[in-house]
Length: 586
Image (cartoon, rainbow, N blue to C red):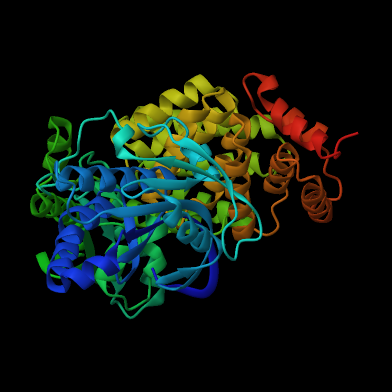
């Protein structure tokens, strides 16, 4: 999405350049341009799409690509170079690239990016062997064993306009024992069946009806998210476009999806008019469109019909369970109770305060009074009690979390096929430090809704505290793919997981990103100070520690550690060790 000039984010950057381009142009200009165009259409661009990248710009014979995941960036680089080698054949002719990959902070200016993260990637590219890949040490450290190659140490180098030495790591397909990759382009790009649902426009002329149009949008997102063969962007990220006039092709590029659903809702009395159109995010062409003029009591049926048509238009293969889910008409249920639930859910989708939790609870209770079997409303109340417990908004924490457990257990009993109840149960069980029960609830939630970004993020935290760090990172990175705008807290947990794995440079990068997004966070600064201590950067660690004490003068690591819910308390040792190395502990 186009962002404000000067905003920052952490990104993986791939820089590519054609080897000997000037010489090739001098020998055969037309043939070289045709070969470059064919290379981009059949090898480079499909690999970028497959690995969820965004081409920031093409510069003559070069390209700059941004990725939300460093693993995706490296796998894209490997796929491109393997494909180039296979296309060249035994004579070794054709386009040959050098590729550099870095992970770092970038400055966003519209659709362009600048900054140190980009500069380093550009300096790494010439250091790669022709046909090979050169990555920074932070990239090699971050990907670990999650790619199918081993990079060789290229030592420390100094490059132009970078004031510090950079340790580089290199790979070339000649040392690759993996099977060659097809370059025909026939294989469907990964996640080609992907969608973002933009917030439906409220056409009622009444701002107080925003909750209704937003609620219907979220219901459609939730229904689509239950389909395993479809990647669905989460509400937090798709709603960043609310009220904006944007080209769906921009949305597709920003969020890495191939289709976008948009529409409008007009509610008048007991009648509702809904328009919906599914658009190909690459071409801007319409895939499906429909208008519904119905009684309000038919709203569930309309939602199901929209979901069915999207599945048909995108040719998604459904499991028997998913087919059964779509076969339901959705007409059962109390419409007035559902309306109250939408209002309560809308409140909880914003900034959560003690007052907002109380307001949502009142709405959920009114929904239950109208429909005593409304499982999601019970789960909503339980979620609120969980927030009361987590934020110390209760005078009796034990009774509060016990009440939350009772309510969410009732929700999952009433509606065992509703993922929302299982998601809330995974949170409540984790707050009770019952990680086995939390993991079981998380498994059930994700089986019913594999695109649930909050559930994936919660599961990542569960795995960190259970000592399963690599699995934790996989869950959190998946959450970031689905919800790039709504997983800032995930940066903290990615930093913590990498810190505990001993990947201190990677940990520091993620924690700095978290601090940029949440300037008053003290806990992320504690983890950053620890990572810096391990890296031998004691002066910087002490500067960060001073910020911790400014934000929270009473902070004590000993007290903090006693509250950390690690199953094995010794798993927290690396945090204290890093702080001790920086001289920050007595």
